[in-house]
Image 1: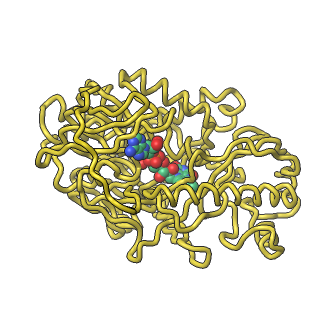
Image 2: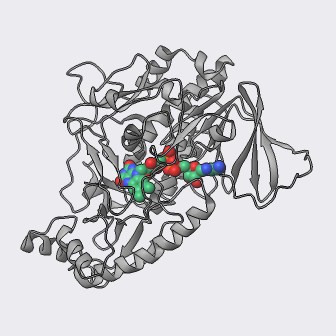
Image 3: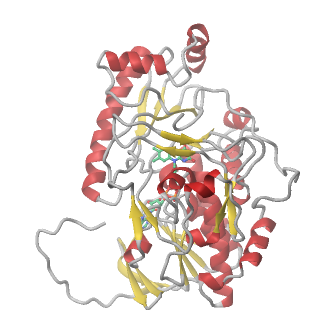
Length: 469
Ligand SMILES: Cc1cc2nc3c(=O)[nH]c(=O)nc-3n(C[C@H](O)[C@H](O)[C@H](O)COP(=O)(O)OP(=O)(O)OC[C@H]3O[C@@H](n4cnc5c(N)ncnc54)[C@H](O)[C@@H]3O)c2cc1C
């Protein structure tokens, strides 16, 4: 988050007003922050969510990530609770056409961005949590192992939020980093997964497109056409497929297509150049789609992400670091607060390298321990979402939105328990936390043969099927 120093200046000490004194403050309104705020507030805590944009949703709205990754392990829903509730709310709020198409689907459900923003507004406010948009958390006040205050900046000026408990759902572990929590970033040589500037087009013809796939046997992710266009110089080298193509209506399609390499999501200059490069790439892709893809001849670009999509930045060092061996052995922990069945999905760090993908067997998952969210050395701070304590391969799996909902729900529930007991996160009785999560509808593994309370996903047969196969 630091800027390059040309020189240093000392700014005068400032007296700041304390503007909010909630029990729980959540920084970030992405999937993890939304679930955290709802669960904390429903569990009785006075809760404030702070978000730098004018809406919630994080990568799913600001970066236009076009679909939710699977909620199921291929046999049953693994992610339930608040995450599942929000998915169903979006389906119902998106209109009859959307609902009819995706009603029974839990895997790869497209995101109707404007509907999702409203669903998040309503759900968070209905929980009783308060929301402050257009506000950045940029400094923490420390008192030993405790965070004593959070400095926020917005149009009203700078002020301090004094909460009992702090939830870092910034996706980048901003709060943890400001508080001096140790973290890792990227791979051994600093390599990071690439970013993608996602976008939405209108004017597509779904029937014509499907007819083309049927007639030619072309791969649903258009491998043949992408390779041909790359050979002709009409697309840059890189991935040979369109990762995600999500049909929101019969004519409106969301794209997660191609990569921008070397983007550091914690560096403003890097985010800036990636945004510009991402928009240029979209221009090339639109020309490719119009020229090569039947059904896309008359498309019009409606919207690109407010920011480039960021897959990976900081991973905190927590009380436990979830590692690839835990993933592969489908390990269960005493303090599990969620289960994960999404595959390891590490996108190539440059145009010449390959993707790392590792699936668990159908019907299998591993546990996500509470300790992964507890940053070393801080007592009243918890981290939820893509920057929890894991090694890099596991981050490549845990990072997806359904998992972020589940981690957020656990963090929010734990925060409310800690607020009530006036203690830190490590004193929260984990059995009781697990009991509450299950009561709220979360699934923590259950007993063998346990019936699924919601219908199994009808696996999508449409062209969008994942972010990276
Ligand atoms: C291109 C791409 C494709 C993907 N494809 C899929 C997919 O198909 N399906 C899927 O489920 N997942 C997908 N993912 C992964 C997923 O979208 C993210 O990992 C997930 O959204 C992370 O959720 P989060 O809540 O941890 O963080 P985010 O979604 O990043 O939310 C963090 C929020 O915090 C706010 N914030 C950050 N810092 C501050 C601050 N200091 N002060 C105030 N507010 C702050 C941000 O504005 C943001 O709203 C994809 C990601 C990318 C980039």
